[in-house]
Length: 326
Image (cartoon, rainbow, N blue to C red; front, side, top):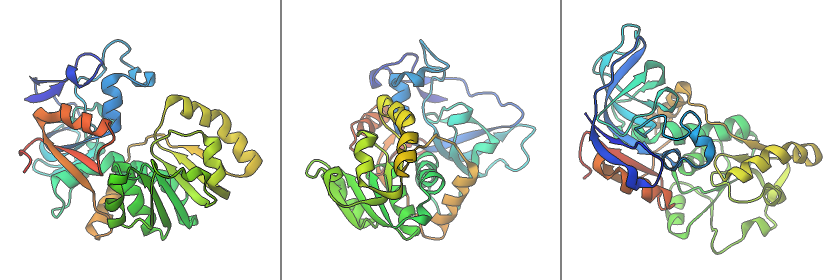
């Protein structure tokens, strides 16, 4: 099978298309013929080996040689211990906890990572959901308690996580302000943003407006600045960001909570089949739409990762593996 492989950390120049062996299955594994995969910021970080925590398990060389956490495809074979899936099932899931490998024609996956894809959902849409959608859902629901809030601000709202977070916040009845680049604001308004801010034109943390919940997908400002625009009893949730700011949050967040009763939390990525199923059901009900910006072929993975890493993506970036992009 063909796969996009890397054997050393670096830029996208170290990626190359290579013929590799189709993996053998263990007791509870499934072999999936991949139709689509999506690119996440974690792919960008693992490729470069930065921040350093991304080298855990592979200090000098990558632990996994094929990137790609979010996949959608058709079950090609099953291990002897798999009872709830059959050959021919259309599935999708986040495979980051069981070996990565989505940027390939086939991938070995633990059966518990996979959700059933509904017939009316394309493989591209299914691949867009797992990591970004679950991060948005868990950040809003589990730490942000969005059902208790009225005013939500999403920083970095124009990417994969942000576009899911906007739609989920609106489902809970929140008034949502979205912050991102100017060229993404029209798209954000089209999917429900009540207010939009171009971060290059407006220093919104200096404004008098305050929020019940801030969901920070970018993590590029001090939490002391964020706490200024959070209401009493409000919450700040960091999903991604610079290592120094994550450490700062871990050190000072509890103190801020104790002194000002403003919860400053960090979301730890937790892949969840149950949450994938929940998001799938929202899609089937017509309440959630994956926003897809661009589609690339397997041979164009380098271009796709560069596009995402430069912050240009409006929603999700998809790798179409079974079929070439139209």
